[in-house]
Length: 285
Image (cartoon, rainbow, N blue to C red; front, side):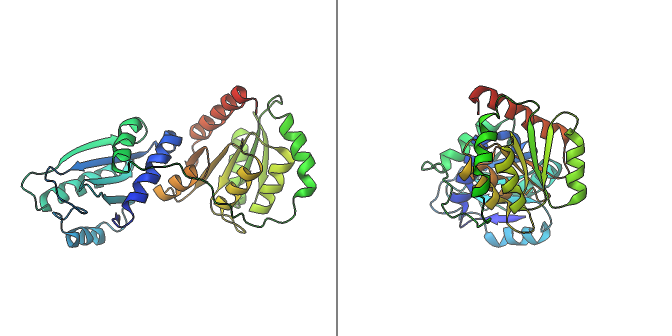
């Protein structure tokens, strides 16, 4: 459990932008919106932070966030398997709140109800602006020698069949597992580290990339930046065993088209493959 207070505005802005980019990446996430009737300036002065910190110690292994908004509302955000914990926190906060009128609480599904929760989030950060990619790129070594191959591969990408899928994963067993899921239907390309991922992307201009966040030589987010820098039309889906909300929002706001948590779901991956095929057919990219 995390308490989001000082950086609540940035957190809310980032989540709102993430939801707008790809609600499907948040399919398993829920939010309880607690609205306090009494109006007062500052960050929820009616609720003692010490009580929240005591609850944080009690729920320290829970994968959920308690966001203290500037308008005194509280957002409880967590994954569906732990929704009971969100309701427990809601009850505890309601009982401990030092207000005359107890808060009204509403449960939102961040996937099916993404429009509603995004509207709520944007109302708390009216100055929300789109995220731009930083200019700094990691050094992946010399890649100019494959630039001609990339231009040729990208030119024929929309017309080739089957689709080409690049899987970037350092674990051999996981890489083979993902490859075996789709090798009968698609052309599979693999890479075990960031350097190999960049070279294979430039050699093959794959239709879609499944990119692990944790790689042995560079961070997956750096690979994402480099791929998008070289190919703004790239369709990249990040994945990680740590499906923390920060990882999801960071990935989508950095330009990824989606996020898949480990262990892999074939249906979830197929969703993005089919979405990519539609995008390629529509944009001829």
